[in-house]
Length: 283
Ligand SMILES: NC(=O)c1ccc[n+]([C@@H]2O[C@H](COP(=O)([O-])OP(=O)(O)OC[C@H]3O[C@@H](n4cnc5c(N)ncnc54)[C@H](OP(=O)(O)O)[C@@H]3O)[C@@H](O)[C@H]2O)c1
Image (cartoon, rainbow, N blue to C red; front, side, top):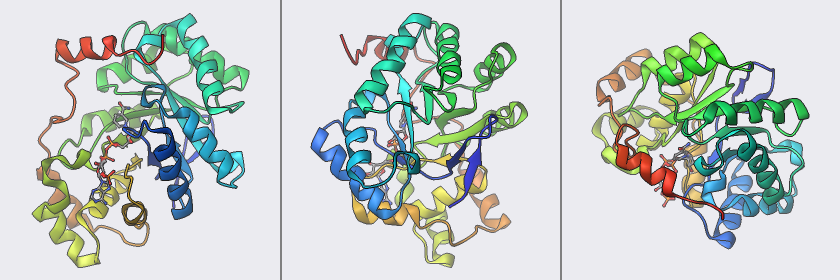
């Protein structure tokens, strides 16, 4: 396992485990305890995933020390804004049963996210948050925030996979010292990723699956990944990417797969923006 280092020196495992779409309390705990057993030491949750409480309980029941697990959470859209975000930080900490979070993100650059960002900066100064970042920022958005904020986002979590490569976003993050993290690094199974002929053929050379090639391709681009699965065998498979290296030729063969667009979300569609604003995760 490699680590990435944020601008303030905090380190995070480059591969972690995402718990999106596992809202059931018992199931989320079971999945996470399995993930810890497989060796994952970084968890990506969010207020909107409705499983922060399960994550906190799983960490405590795992037998691992709190400082052995890196935990990220995210502030949902309805809580973005200076006062609202301040309260939401405390709400997440209470749900998790933690006195600090390793990383807190604003889930979307929506609403008063500059106010929300100031609340995260304060959480950092107060020691409630060890690191702070953004999610779903396209290049112009992350550039603007980096040029304006007192503390630059340390990480930007965006959709990246072989079919949506986001090179310009990666170049922008590099320029401003922002660590890139991929959500949907397995494209949520879209684009036929798990049986894709190019990824499968590359994997064959190394005795690896298409999923492993896709994850390895991301980490070799300097991206942190957080694949999600509820299956223990797949947890092991997704973690077994640290014992091989894709050649330059392999990396180049994946480049033409880029479609330049997402099949999962459309931040440029007003209906999608309205849907995100309408989603409430608490009263
Ligand atoms: N910031 C954001 O807006 C945002 C958005 C989306 C996600 N995220 C975060 O990123 C994490 C990962 O993204 P994601 O969950 O959207 O998608 P993902 O990790 O790209 O894909 C997950 C899907 O792939 C399947 N899968 C996983 N490993 C597999 C394997 N080795 N072989 C075959 N199928 C496999 C899973 O099925 P099974 O579970 O049935 O195995 C699940 O359906 C999330 O859990 C969440 O923490 C953040």
